[in-house]
Length: 364
Image 1 (cartoon, rainbow, N blue to C red):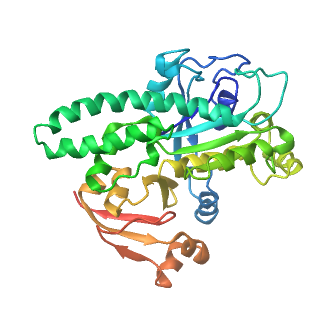
Image 2: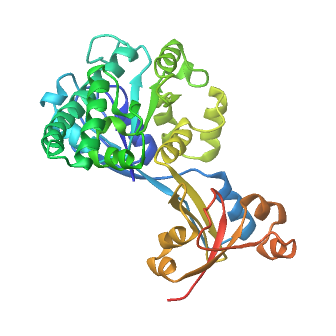
Image 3: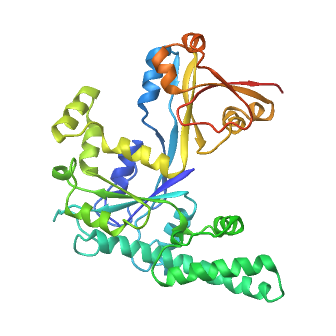
């Protein structure tokens, strides 16, 4: 599961990527400095993991991770191959969610590809390119589906109907995610189309240091623009975040954050936002050898969660012993949780909750 960072050239994508991953994506004041997509495997900050570490004192701790992809900047005409358009669109198609970075700061020393700072225009530039690419995909599929539908094929008729609705939305400059599938068949079809504008999106407003804690007028404009999109808006000062990552000690970083009026780096909140955007959640295993955060999809059952550790755990699943995170913290040890009768035994139908501390019984 990957979240791709997209935006126009020079909006702070590669600098943000560096903050998130500490990988050294090239960061420079000119377009197309990131030619190949850079992938960073990023630890998901989770205070619960730190608390479990304090209680258990394990030999090692393993956080959950999420893959972040830094993708080359897009320009007008990308859907027709302008700039690095085809490569950009191919890379974004392979991602499961989009982190859309918008420039929301004024700085005469950093060139804007369109000559002025206007996040609304910038968002629309990228939306239109993605919508045009999806329209191309939809029109090809629709032509094929219509031919098959004429033979009386019911599945093709359903597909053609859905594609017509998507095409209408795209022609109105609306993203495909605004078209709601009417039934399970349409849901399956929508997923099979692999359209770029159905991917969930998180808008990240890149502000200057003075707006790091409160945002600014540009952030307000973006929030107003996307209020009907069912999308989240965050803001962070990417340049300042880069400065924070350069500091040597935790204490220095905390002092810097306090001066800005922040409790934690904005990058930490962004990573958690990307994790949620990908429909992911965490369960824990806790023992003296290791305390570990495991990544699963929201809605996964206990056997599916067990399968993340090893496929044999899923195949031979017998039961799961489950402790709610709050109960583990309140009682302090697994033994005390058992004494209090708070350890539950769950079967194959159990839907894992975010933060569950689990132990699996299996037989292969």
